[in-house]
Amino acid sequence: MSATTTSPLNTVEATSDTTRRAGLFAPLRWEVRKLRAQYRAKAVLLGAVVLPIIIVVVIHGQSRPPKDTLFGRFATVNGFALALLVLGFAAQWVIPLLTAVVAGDIFASEDQHGTWKTVLTRSTSRGSLFWAKTLTTAGFAVLVLVVLATATIASSVLIVGHQPLIGLSGQTIPATEALRLVALSWAVMLPPMLGFTCLAILLSVWSRNPAVGIAAPVVIGMVMQLVGAVGGVEAIRPFLLTTPFEAWHGLFADPRFTGPLSQGLLTSAAWCALSLGAAFAMLRRRDITGG
Amino acid sequence: MNELLAVDATGVTKTFGAVRAVADISVRVAAGEVYGVLGPNGAGKTTFLRMLFGLIRPDSGTIRVLGKTWDEHGVGVLDGVGGFIESPRFYPYLTGRQNLEGLALLDGGTRPGLLEDVLDLVEMSERADQKVGGYSYGMRQRLGVAASLLREPRLLVLDEPANGLDPAGIRDMRALVKRLAGSGLTVLLSSHDMDEVEEICDNVTIMKRGAVAFHGTISKLRTMAPDPGHLLSTTDDDRALALARQHPALLVVRDPDAALVVTGPQPDVAAYVSTLVRDGIDLLAFNQTQTPLEALFFMLTDDTTHQTLDRPVELTQAAR
Image 1 (cartoon, rainbow over the protein chains, first blue to last red):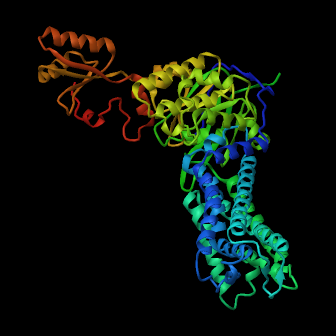
Image 2 (cartoon, one colour):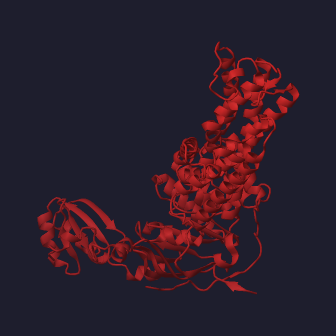
């Protein structure tokens, strides 16, 4: 059925007034402002400062070091070894969780609050909003990693000490070089962490549920670690997003090997590209019917 | 000079799975008019408005807003357009002012002082620095209007702005919308309340199950409206029912609640009441059941009845 009516045809002129575009910078500022107002983000940052210090103090106070873990043998007597022990633990599930707390929520919370219709009826395109949110979560991931790494390394070195480190091949690494390598090892976490950030974004867009967006990347990370640990799956290990978390091991061998670093970079980049591509396509095509 | 309609939607259809939410509707809204889209819940009003805002893509048809289409102009379609869909939503952990500041950012900025002006207009200045999570429903509605006006729109789209408000809130919201309409804005108002549309709008589209049931002016609608119905309670309903035979223009039936329902032209109803009083029957209650336009609205949109009264089943037992 079709019908048409109009009152006495008052008409408007097509004008170019009120033509304003927010571009990318304005929604980016808006997302950062929202993030700064959220207790959750503040709690994550606070946790990234406090928890490493507590862990360092607890391990340092133990009479028997955790010998069955990488660098665990020296963790109670060498600050660099302890910082690497914490790194190994954080890579298992802490880092995916820390980034997913924001990335898994940032799209789904718009569904939760019903605010898609609020922001998408302004002069900002879906694409701009998508990239603003993505850049915000990526920036937050970098910030959390820097805070976590700084808190861990500083507390380890200050509480346990900065003696020369015994490398994986038994070589002695001078303190200055050990500090550089430990910092580099933490930096190596960034690509897979961003991979998990993008995965969380995808799950946030797909599920429209913050709980799924936050928890699922952690669970997926654990499953990947499990798969990577079992025998007979060497062919798929390089493609797992958790494998790059171990790429730093080669930095402490003699001679050093950096192949896993570049492989990890590629793997992480692929996960980022695929996850973001799928998330972007979903958001672009989606009908906003809720809220 | 390029002359355009504020809204020019042609042959718009949207289907969700097996459900046809909007079926080939066409709506034209001229500049400066206050246009109502009316229909019961599920009629397709909100889906149509969501398509207008680009939140939903139509399966077919074109929607031109202030001369622009989504395909050609993208988000530029919304230049000069403000409004909200269903109840406006905000970030509860931010204050009202922070929400508006953020939305202004997404608009590419606003002129200085406008934010305070719109807060004043909706009488939210004093509560603007409280978190939205603590706002009442009515305050959020008003903040929604403020957020819409922040865009300095030429076309204001309001989807059931008085929905869920208490009577005082409804009165205030209607007064606000009338004030905005009086300022020369083009207003597209969606509602399921005939009174609201009748009070505010010049033209109306009535929707039923995704299709257009009526298009036209409010005055044209009034000419189509049936006689009003009245609920009448007397000291002797049996005798009152018998006396109704002296007024053949009226339809008088017994209501299940032991009252009478009187339907017919206003002068005949008045004459009937005079007859009752003259015969010593006292009136205990006398209320209009529906306004004529309400009755017409139900006729146009209700699947279960094509009668003018709200208790059509009783009409089958009618006696004159």
